[in-house]
Amino acid sequence: MFDIQLTHEEQQRAVEKIQELMAQGVNSGEAIQIVVRELRELHEKLAENKNIL
Image (cartoon, rainbow, N blue to C red; front, side, top):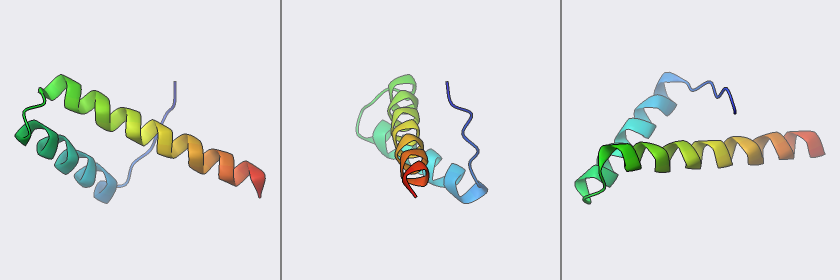
């Protein structure tokens, strides 16, 4: 499991994304899971790119 540190701005964007998903009819638990999955994938890609350099 990843320990992802988010800035306040990143946290705000995550909350907004969750709210957007919920407005589209996604339940809160699923919306959170979707955003967490996206954050983990982004974090993995950034870590991989950092290792390449």
